[in-house]
Image (cartoon, rainbow, N blue to C red; front, side, top):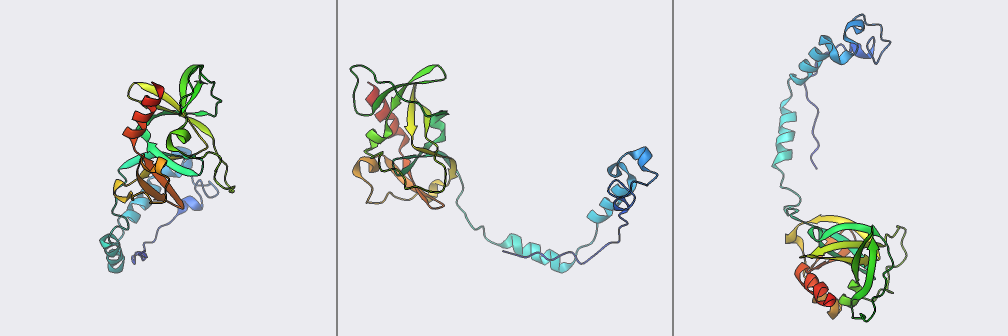
Amino acid sequence: MTTITSPIAIIDIDDCWNRIGVVGDQSCPKLEQVVHCRNCEVYAGAAQRNLQRLVGDDYKKDWAAHFRQAAANTHQLDASCLVFRIGREWLSLPTRMFVSVAPQAKPHRLPHRNGRGLSGIVNVGGTLYPCMSLADLLGIDESEGEAATNRHTFARVLLTQWEDQAYALPVADLHGILRYATASVQAPAATINKGLSRFLSGVISHDDMHIGVLDEALIGYQLARTLR
């Protein structure tokens, strides 16, 4: 990190606004007409002289060296996702898939529909949505929740849209929206369970989190297939 030195040239400015102006004892006779020091030509003139002051060569050299430094991170943040947790797995889907986030709601079972992945229907704001269990679809054990931490957890229902169908996806915790560089996405680890790994296109490292990037097309297809 470059330390920028102060300008060498110092100009003498009478800061009357701090003595007799609005910041001082307000005894300046000009206040009756201009109301506030910022409307006074003395204040404006001082600001103009300050901006036009000469700067030293060392000051210019320090700034030139600062802007010659290579950027610390050349990866462009060209994508965004919504990060959530199911069981102990932090996962993400593109933000464009999501319509809104709703409070946790208990699904109501549908008669004669007990297929894997369909938990029932949920009422969100007076609208019924098919409630889909990503835990079932991805082979994640929801009982293996994240170990107790000092942070609050936010169980929510994510309302998402795939083609012309809306779905409700319950999650155990919600981290929020994350911008990331697609060039920084890493390959999934070989230790990830087979049910989940086939739906992953990569992994994002963020702070102390390893976030699985779910394949949008595969997830959308699986949701639609489960609802048939």
